[in-house]
Length: 440
Image 1 (cartoon, rainbow, N blue to C red):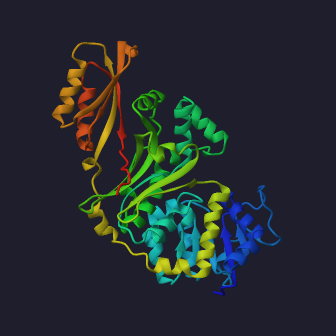
Image 2 (tube, rainbow, N blue to C red):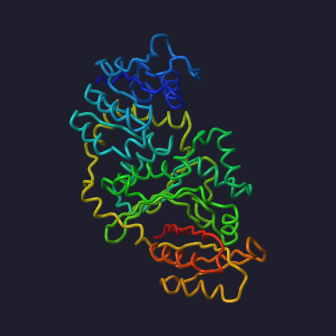
Image 3 (cartoon, one colour):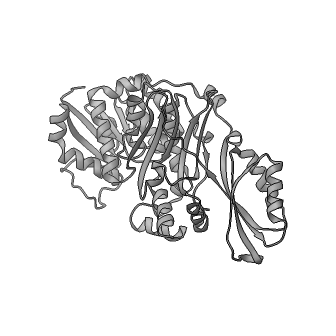
């Protein structure tokens, strides 16, 4: 590869693809001055040649013929921005087999088929660069792979989905219900017309699979990540949490315990309003990473959008062109999936504190009944909250917080709660996550 002139081809001329084109066309000279690399856009492939886009291409670059990208041996790097795990997977293999490095923002593809594609890249003596797959313009992949390489990472806590964070921020700060907050997110372009993968936690889980694999040095199957979304979060529970000093976030959590067992999970979490992550508002992302040497490090930025994600894609192009990505990729080693599964903690055995809300009939002995069930399952109460007022069937909300207990204990207790004749409806259960403070 000529270090002064590198030809790139792009597949996927959507929102992010338009941003990449904009940077390559408008910022070419500054990139060349700063890096010594001239990035030349050779072709742009898209199935729709006529839809309006926020950037204009020079004549002759746009095509619907993917063979123009795959078969052109003068193209050094192929950028895959089409998304999905079907056709994109085939395209990665074709690009690698044709002698091209690959740059991608496809988190779902790497989370579900990463090891297969990495093996194909090594066989072709090429690399896959994927900074843009997690957290948009926030360089979290680089931070883990290089900036924290001297550390044994023990934990990461992340707000990895801007759509969910925007929705929960509006519910918290503006007292909006879930449906109204979602509609506003869609109106502002923060949520897709079909927001399912965002609000059900899958998007965060894809990113956590990638980040966790890098942080803990092992192949982590996507289907081993525990996932809960935010669809069931109610405004009353958010307000109760605020009264007790907590803010709710959709957290992606990766932890390694003293025995080396790893857990990855995505779920709504109450966290102390005094923690830095609690102050991350709107569509922003943030990740807190704990290393044995560096302590706690915090990364913050725009996790999605045309230009932030495009910035990460072009950064990867530069790193590939300079040869840095190939070196990092060649040395990216982790425990194989077969062994990694044995090291993963079962979600039922993970300790957590819990927030529980039950709608209880206003009768004597109700609190005693709750306390007995919790005690029978080795769960200790740390606090309680009850307001005057009436709900359906003359019920009142009773809120309980617990000391740490295993999830399987809580599941069993909740099952018993629902069998009580004084309980109306299904209890609400939300984890309380105590993010450790950095200390000497």
